[in-house]
Length: 326
Image (cartoon, rainbow, N blue to C red; front, side):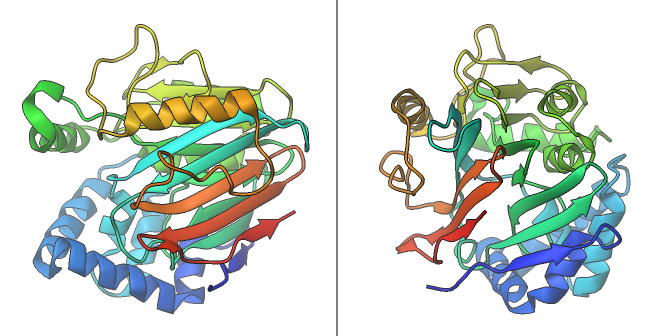
């Protein structure tokens, strides 16, 4: 089992550039896997399209993506940073052992190499230190922990045009992005970790800030009961009754849409069961249907104590040792 490196980045450095330079072998693994998945021609096309859109984005991190592109010196940085094709299962539950609320999280993506190339970045920011379970060269935040403040993660919601199939939904989503200059959801989550000093501040930012694509945010605070799921369209927000999320809309009166994949409802039901029964501090809860062949990342994060468990997975099973940060 390989170990997951922890890269400390001061406030004066861009963490995506620092991680790309610190872990060139893991970055190369990602790029090789991307070429196999998208083909070299498809990768160049998607990278070029993403580069053009980035030039119109109002994201405060758009320049950071360009810095990663310069550091890499080859196509792939824009594709890596604006891909949005994964599945996830996430929940936030009161923690009887550590106190406060703990975030439980898996990220699923049929992309070989993600589990083996996983890293953790620890960064000093305006609002305090935070940790991001991520990959070399990735500018946004998908799963993070700010000790003493909150933990949060992003899930991907349904595609638009559910009656017209996945291909048309994917195309419609890209057309909407091309018409928008708002922040990508992963950049908004990074902004929350870097600028929000409290759970309530982060909830307000994630709920109210326009984004270029729909997203589902799950956030856990330092106190019992500080557990929220925020289902976001580009300019509206909805909250389901239970703080659990997969890849479908669960809010009463929220958006309409078909689950992104067939297992989504079953995975959310299983996560709701974990929220009801509790959990220990291990990955014993990684069982079917939450654990899938496409699972590449598992995280537990408790902002009250600052403890975080991280493990990379591949199709064959665990790809890294468990990283236990306290």
